Length: 82
Length: 415
Image (cartoon, rainbow over all chains, first blue to last red; front, side):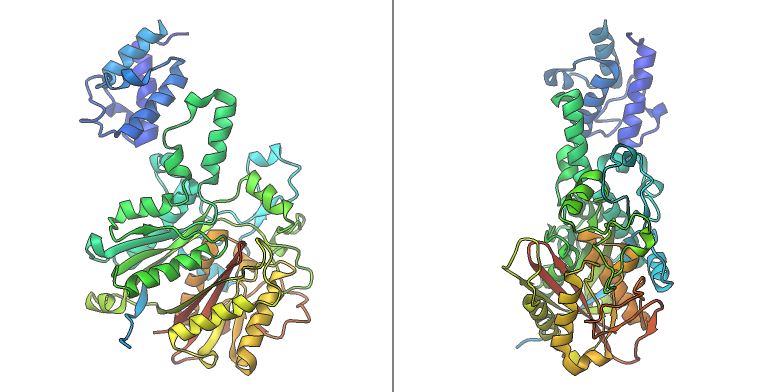
């Protein structure tokens, strides 16, 4: 069943927390993965892999570079689930 | 000949089946405790057919020490090394050293075996796309050296010596040479292993290398006892901070002992069995003493490799007896694997720490479980309780041997 955007944000925040130790409350829509959350490319790929499984979606490698902010990722996943 | 730079130990750290740090591990060893127990792990229920159901797991699990992201991003192999390295670095007083003069030499016999096998399980169950991007940095055997180099900013080289169960001792020998040759002033050196997974257990058991004394785990590691039936697998890490004596003195560091010499040989005999006469084991000890400019007359303690295998223990004992002759009378022999189990690539490092502390505190640690000593053992084995070592300038040898025919002897001297 598709999750709504709040549920996706929550799930993504959990993945980011597990991977980086950042508090889930830090992971908000407007945050940039690289500039605000200090996530390197290897961690970003890990987060994408985990998110694909969690939300049962496919995020092609070409798309990952377009996911600058947490909100971008939430929107992409929501659309991909629809 | 110009005098070589002296190399001293200014910090120690460990996590072992006996304790979560070097001090508690050493105190448990002096108290003749066993770190061996039956596995309680979840995976055990899926593998009841394993011939071995026990081993030496960490006294303090890494999950109680490291934050969650480090548990996820580092294989247990590197986690244990990082725990030991942080303790050692702090114990050394966090030396001020230029990054270009700081090295790391962290060994492992196997590397990130948990990561490799879990990733394969993931791929078989859920497909190639589910394999995580951190798999390679986690499974590579140099991962621990890389992480430690990163954490402490070591730019004089981060190395991983791989020589099975001699790896941890070889890394300390390698670090010694790094400082002697002038490549570094301080080196974070040691070994780590996290082999307690059903596959390594099944593999070592297939060689008949492991004790199968499932009904008496604490009594299973019994080096030199007539009823020894194989080694007991353990996990953990040991790390020392090695430093040129000049550098240590200039910063007023406390000094535990001197790493005075290393001797390395190889059997060229068999891929797994030791050469029966122990010729190259003897030569490793001889080379280490020559390197340290000492003789058998100066050695009062040997921490033996002695893993509790029927064949290996006596080859080493005879090599020591043959080399030392009448000087064997003043050697206190200890086999601490009787308490820790065999930590494979970490063994040589943890046992070096025990040897360093034995010299510093003048206490040879006990060998437990020797109820019926092998009649061929002629050496003075420290059984059941620790025994005092003499005052004055004393030296000890720590032996480590590994599958592949690797022999490493370290000479450690009191300060």
